[in-house]
Length: 166
Image 1 (cartoon, helix red, strand yellow):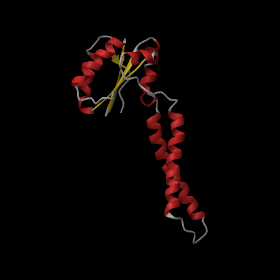
Image 2 (cartoon, one colour):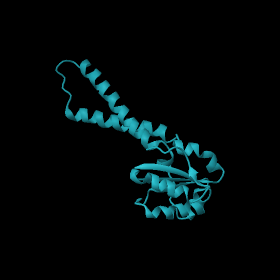
Image 3 (cartoon, one colour):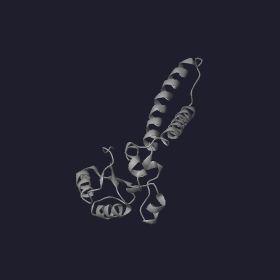
Image 4 (cartoon, one colour):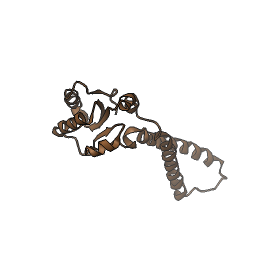
């Protein structure tokens, strides 16, 4: 999936873009709108972007899990050689250490990631403060150019929020 972000001047054009995208194979729940007044987004029957779409939460959790596994392997290897000879580490204890490491890594990294906006949100913060709306759409990669062209041709005032990222 590819994430595209566009800035639209108002909710009317955002609603038109949402209708235009119905012709593409975009699943429900893959179109989000972020604005200064989220109540207006809800009133327009559009899905408001939540923290999982506007913050670095999900990528941070993934990075935290990977990092915690590497740290766990290093510590486990180090302490294994410090154990007295003949001491056995049960599979249950090893599994417990792995689960704890994964959960701890995900938890700590999510606390950091939730406070960091995505590049697109950060790049569009002035537009959002000015009353415009950030449209976030997740699409299959093979239709990226078609969707981008369709959205950009909807209005002269619609533009890409930032270079699109995965």
